[in-house]
Length: 239
Image 1 (cartoon, helix red, strand yellow):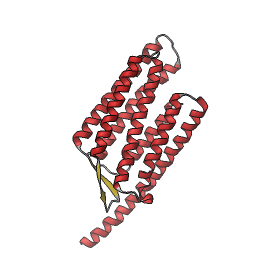
Image 2: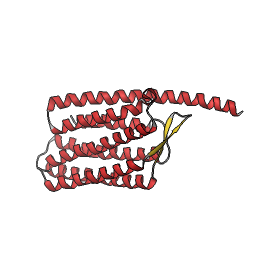
Image 3: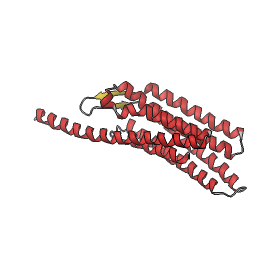
Image 4: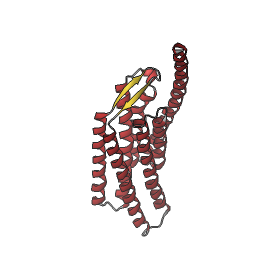
């Protein structure tokens, strides 16, 4: 019974792993397509926000692709851990910086606003790096995946700060845009408000996905799909 049970489990694992690998490959293609679109926008507009958007998408795709193609590249759990977390840090930090630049211009170059938002970014980055030091993973022979192990206390603190910064950045951004829209009524400000709201939703969703994956042990493609959706959103708001 044990023998056959093991065989059935192995076949099920291989089928599941094949589906996940196929889905991850599609996600990887979406990410690199987003890089292509971001480069096009940067060459066309030639502004700081578009350059930042290009660097962010390029770094995120380059860092996360090895994780998506883990079976082909035969990388260990240490490499999987590093590439996954670097991708997460890149997408969250750069998204905040892009919104910071937009808010800075919308606020008529307010240095106070710039200082507040950059300070929040530095605090968030520091916590991410601290969590990276406590992040560990163990290879699962049957599932061919890396089971994440992380300090729940460190992760919870990071997620709380992340969520708070998302609310702060989006709130400040929308307030300055709303105040400016009272002087200049254009569709541009409606678009900027949309950017602020979508940033908060996407960034918060990434935090929730992180908790599900790292604390509850949810496996599969939550992280890849979350990154792909986030990447697509960020390319959309940059142009």
